[in-house]
Length: 199
Image 1: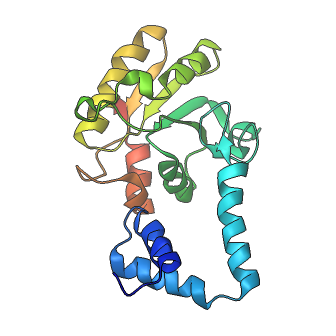
Image 2: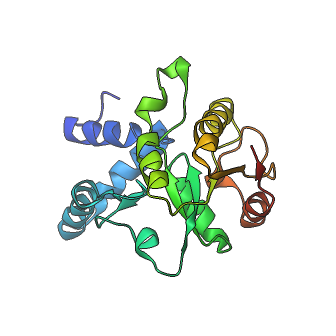
């Protein structure tokens, strides 16, 4: 939009580049920033910088964490013999809302998708194998999304992990095909976890 001064247009463009943010939402957010007090604007900018510089990956499960090991992996009350493998950290948040799962997680950071040029080597599968080789893990719950790439990843993991002597299960089809875990309600996620099956 030519009527916007460049700094404001740049801000709109940055908001527009975020997933799921359209032009109108980007404009609203940009004008909200303009309306902020200086201290609030600097605090907002600092929060973005802190998120980028102070958040890394848990050395165990590859979930996002502000510490070397995340709170879930460092918890003595969790069952470390059961690992739920998910595509991304949003899925961890969704499953934690259910409050019924007491195991730990492993975040793959995507799924196998030849069309997008993503193979097993681009995912955090090597780190999962290292965890299994440590000997504590008895069950892997594959909780990738019920999409084509999610199912392909689940089958790949099943073939890869079963020879290692761990039980490999898949969450039940309480989730509709094509749905993402983070958008499912707690009851559906609970049924999916409780109804998991061998793959």
